[in-house]
Image (cartoon, rainbow, N blue to C red):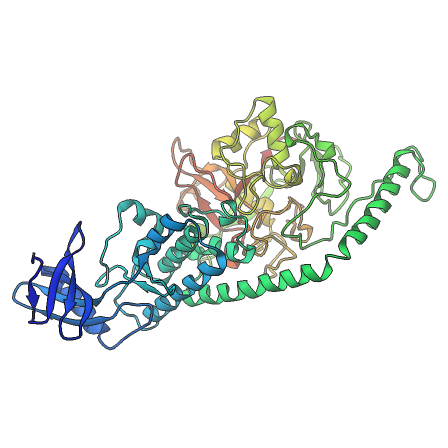
Length: 590
């Protein structure tokens, strides 16, 4: 290549390479305009591509994208004269100062998203295919320029940085840039490598609306992210407003809250004392020795995003908390029916091992999967076909943190490697979340629990019938569109909710949370379609190896993903996730 001191077109005097390891980008000086610049040199196929990009960009300018002052070629090389970056990269800033406050990071992200919105709106061939902190230059006035992939890339990413900030599926569409934006924002706010969990785990000062936006945008599944850069820009704009409204509401009511709480606490203590001494009995001549249980209403359909323990509860370590003393018992929409010798729809049994209620699913045929003309359905859900199953029992809710603790203490289950949730660092060990669904466990751990409890993981067939019944409904509750009274989804809460919190979303057999809250492991290996099952749809063909299937949807799922026919698979044998849990099933009454 060229050497320092060489002058191009009697105007651009080359100096040192811009970075020692990159020999095709030079610092330079424009002797006519009296300004610093960069000279990027290419040859062969790369030269032809850069020339097309330079011609397309000649008449466009955005304040957060570098200017292209000039471009030309000779018999060997193509030359692009670029605006020289000022200041330092965001990668260098983070190494120097550590994490950046949210009020400072969000304006930087707005500059980034503005630039990429411009690029995609005009379909410009610049900075496409994702970006990382090393591509982002910031000056002393906090003005940002993106020297991204392609013509304006002046310092290529290392393999390690690329794997963290470039979308896993590759490509140069908007969803790939949405992933990169979320990954960068995660790192700016936490000074940690991006991961698919809430950034509040590393920095609790991040506001919940911002954390929810990052979670949605950083998912490895492209279809789960914002569809466009503009959608993410709007979401971040609304997030600040939502947070300010919450702060105003809290500041306006904090004086009254302790008084109200005290009155409620006193009344509850009096009632509990009366019940304990047998002074309260049911009206109508009930035996006074049998206390009346006063439970919270099961019609509460929008659980709080930041649950707090009851003021009357005594907090004890989760490992020693007995099942009967759970501080937040799961709501029961209807009384448990008395078991009869022949179970029917509505029959419920209680497992003696872990106190899990199970619901009965009678034998018979049901329609599984989706029709070919269902535009929301993926190929893996098709074709719709009939399946005939014997009767069985399935857990009414997902297995909880407290129930899994019992298995660990008994030696039947291994400990979890991660004990947080997206917004709760002490999720697994805090008694407040005892009745919330277990997450961060592998298929092997789920299977081991069911074996310890005297049950097993349900098959895909069993799971889907328990969720939709025999009328081929779209959702557990029927065909009405999802909303926040029926399930926990679409980042409306931003984390898990207590099992059974949405009784209005119950399935035809009274199973709860069959859509939303967490995705669930099932017994079977995953098939890319239902075609292999058609020759004998009752019994899937056996496989000795493969990747396990998952069913249901999670707190982060979008509307199209909460249909009961949606199928998932795990591409890692030991994969654990913050939105995956499980429930068990049994061929016999527990």
